[in-house]
Image 1 (cartoon, rainbow, N blue to C red):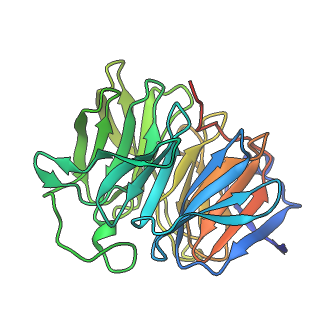
Image 2: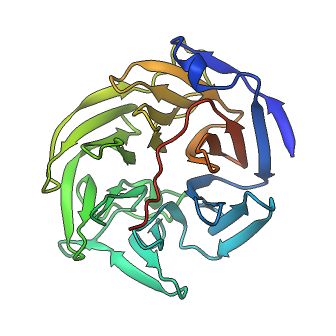
Length: 307
């Protein structure tokens, strides 16, 4: 494995406690076209990630270092998450569907239409404690690099929820480019970023799953203009509620009040990432054509919590 010492942009002294400055980025695999959808499995100890334009989903084993292909073709799968039963839920750009891979390998369609029209292109996805599935639906899967060129299907770019009974609900429609989303550790807040507006919004989640609020939580700015390209895309929270989100230069970390703490700098624009390893202190990153990892001083919050 190729190890390259990385730079951190420390904006707040607290960030120094969240990282290990003696560590460097490790290149685990390379030669991809555009990696996305990074997902950790805590029991089987592997990372699943997609290469959207190559139309494949890959899996990398922490224990063996082996890279395998899970789906080929993948219908240009982007974001992925596990449900409460450990089944893989996928956002497919080419088909504008949310699908589930059953334990026997068959594919079940969970959502593909809203009020008779196709969805635009489901992008990123999370599951809450009730088993409801939340996903963003921008236009990026209708472009010529990360999807199939075609006209928008809906007059808005929304955020949806599939309830445990299977019904689809529109929960927000005032985004220009809804992309990454994640819950706070207590599940009382839902963070959703807008790639086009380059900011993160925060919503309060009621006991009946209704959303309220939606104020701007943080901007993923280019700081002094010294960072490379990148925009808000993949997003996760850590164990103490800090919000980590891709942005210019790499991955930005914000405290629960929205204050920027620092940036993990990456050699290519990072589209997605996840916390992994048994202690959730390894950051696995999908950065353009490469798949990377780096150890941190702060543990992430578990995403896969099977019931």
